[in-house]
Length: 312
Image 1 (cartoon, rainbow, N blue to C red):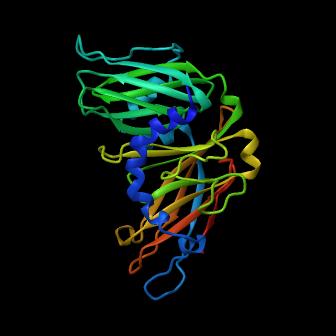
Image 2 (cartoon, one colour):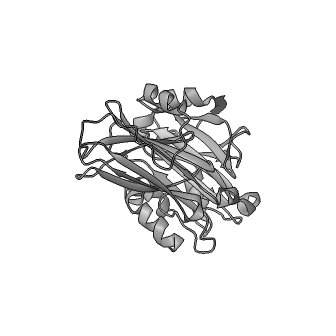
Image 3 (cartoon, helix red, strand yellow):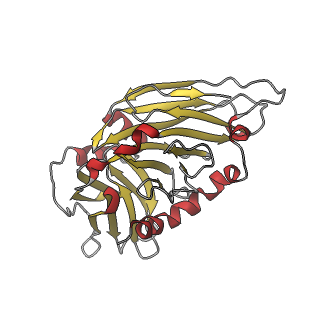
């Protein structure tokens, strides 16, 4: 099946979710308009960042409300194509399937007829995000694999969860950078490959996840912002041979509702299926009074290195 058809189909919902977040960027014609912020007195804003390694169990406890369930699943050694872990009532057992797709993606399909409009917590490796079943109890998505022997857990709450495993044969060809956060509006990952500048053909973000020149490079947004305690993740995926000509940024468009707050995102990478450490990357929003503005943090294409926060 054509990769563009698969990826574009998977992105219809997530693009709608992200539309309001990046509307401002589409109105900007020059990079300088995005990267300059000032307070009400037209003085430069003071910004700072802090990055430190976070172990897997710590990150999970912070991101997933069902942390005890996550701990149990992470210690489970099962490696099957489809593992039913549900404790639902008879006749209500959900089913979860995971299949390898093009570009080292995982096609995930959940059928849960007794769980319509239900909040889901989905995890894979160090990736975690929230979604919701439809009115019939179904959910489907594509997510980038972060390991060759990939395991996906889906939590429906009340000790009901599913687990599926799949082998992803072509993961060796890809580098992936992941940024994930809880709830914060206006936050997003931007990827630049083939030497692209802001707004150019190689500049990928939630409103522009594909590149016409390098169609196997893409940026996927996962997570439902309308769910309770929404957990959002964005993944910049590029072929290994593009890594040397690529870069990434974490961008926060803020307004006075975030005055003086520290905004955090968890950042890590996967190189040919080998994960890096998870880093808690922080942005300090200026104190009020301040106008709306944008903070930008440069992210190296290895989460093992310290991030370089840039304010302009």
